[in-house]
Each structure stands twice: as C-alpha cells, then as structure tokens.
Image (cartoon, rainbow, N blue to C red):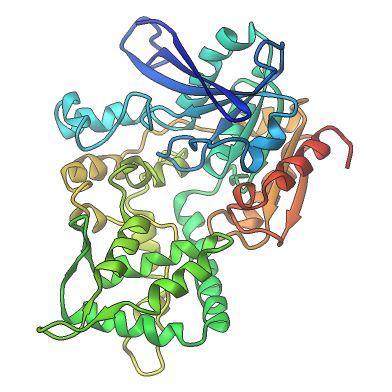
Length: 434
C-alpha cells in the first residue's frame, strides 16, 4: 500500500492525513514494511503556498503527536512560516501500533522483543528521512523535538544532518554518553527536590500522602482500569511535578482521596479515576517497555536500571520509619509495573528480554555533532524533572554552534504551557535574532 492523503478543515487550519509505508528495518529496504502516519497542518488560506516544512517529534518514547484543535499553543507561531507535520512515531497513534493487542501477531516474546529493537530514535530518524523527499521534494526541513523528540533530533544531527535546515529542541538535550544508571543517579535527587518543593507549597500534602500510603500498605486497592495501586505505584504520581501545573493537580488529587464505606475508609472512585489517567500505560506501552532502551548504546543491558538505582536512595523507602518522609518519585519504569497494570502484563516477558539486551547500536556521533553546520537552538529548563540539566548543558557544549536558552520560567512542558513564547524564542535564537 502506498502513500495516501485525506484533507479536512478546522477553523484557521487545513489538515491533511498522510500515510506512508516505510521499511520496518531500513537496513533491509526490500523487506517487511509498516505504516507511518503524519498529520499535515497549514494555515487556512496558505494551503497552496510553497512553504518550508517543520516536522514535530513528540516526547515519549511511545506517544503519538498531539491532536490539534485550531491554532493552539506553539502551533500558532509555527504556522506563521511553516507547513507542519505532526508525526506519529512508529508504534504510536495511527501508525502501525505496538500494544498488548497487536504484538502477539509477531509471535513469541523473543520475536516481539526483536521487532521492538527497531522502534528507537535511530529508526525514527530514518523514517523521517524516508518520507522527507516525498513531502519537501528533497529540500531539508526543520525539526522541532520535545523531550524524547529532542533526543531524536540529536540522533538526526548525528545520522542525517543533510536532511536538516534547522533544529529546535525543548527539554530534550540528552547526554551523549551517560548510561541508564547515570541518568537515574542524577534523577532521584531531582525527584526529592521537586517533592520537597511541593510540600513547601502545600504543607498538608505530606500527611495526606502518608495516610494514603499507609492505607495501601494495609489494604489492596484496584483502580478503575484494573491496575493495582501499590505504595510504589502511588509514589509515581510524582511524575506530575515535572509539569507547570502538576503540583496543583497533585494537591487537588490528594485533598479528597477517601470516602466512608461500610467496610471503612476507601479511596474514592474519583481519586482512582484521576490516578489511573496519570499512571495508565494502556495506550502507550512502549513508554514502559522501551523507556530505558533510549539510554542504551554502550553494549550493556539496562537491566531495570531505575529499580536497581532506587536502592541507592533509601529515603524513598522510609515512609513509615520514625522521622522518615514520604517521597514521590517521577519518570521511572519498574518490572513490577508489568504485574500491576493489566495492559502491560501480556508484555512482561518481552520487556524482560529487552531489559537484558546488550547489542544496542550507538545513537549519537560526537565527532559529527562537533562539526555540524546545522543551526540548532535548545530550551533547557532549570532543574527539569525529566531531563538532567547538567547533562543537557554538557551536550550543548559538544554540538557546534548550538545556542541555549536556560530558563526557570517553565517546567518540562514549557512548549505547551508557554504558548507561542517558547517556540518564538527558539526561532529567534536559531535565526541569530536574539
């Protein structure tokens, strides 16, 4: 099946659904093919203009591009000068899916794991290069990478800089050489800082969180999606603290968690529904299964790094000790998630195989990055919960000509929360206008 297009309109926008058949393995272009989806977005009235292209790479791994409703957030600024492609990276959204429902079509867990090794940043970049000539006529395009999308953009600079006109990165400058263990050793102290800052803002929340944790230690609770809410799973609600409004959302979640029942206090259905919305990976299993693999490139297995490194930070386990504090965690994946979440249970063995894999290919070329002539600008968020600031700044110094904007005005979701502001600043930096 070849490329397809379907167009429709929203107020202020013309949107075109684009489908592409791409090689599963770009080293074997004549082999199996999978489907890739991208949504072309252009300002109404400019659909027939010969505009430059900007391809947007979503954070993740394992999340599709956002679904726009009019000229919202950063898209409003981008459409002033670009035709935008919102790409559903392979395995996500309307691209050929990779979920508990579809992966069994590949066969055994070993075959599923082998299939998923082709869903990292290097394959995503080669997908982009495969479809770029079909859209631009061969001209380079601009890449905007958010979070993991920024990791992909750095891989793009390493593998195929000839395809790039400009690169814009928000909250996604990766370390070029830190393995997963180093990433999480830097991450747990950030999680603690973010948690303590939350308690300083909402002093009653630590006691509220401790009460929930004590309840979970004594009584099993099941969320509306069928997931088991353990103490460790409850701690993961700290992932909210990496977003601009996340501290407030966490507070409102905690403040009214219990309801009286004939069997005593239980967590309310309202609490459970909101918690499930944050914690569930039913729609994005690759976020769990491939998360640590995005850091793997040194010939070593990740071997559930976040779980192992957590033991080096015992303060996250001292909930009920005298003087111990209850600490939320953040963006981590653990083997117990393959037990507690129904959507992940069928993929448990597949995930275990990937965690032990050692033959991951390098994702970055430091020498090529040091010589690049592609203009690059990056927003680095001060004390970003998800991406270590020191790692990002070290990488920024290793990429020729890269200009950074280090800011504490936003959290990791600055591109969304900042509307036009963040993208406009990056465009001015990359154009030497700021």
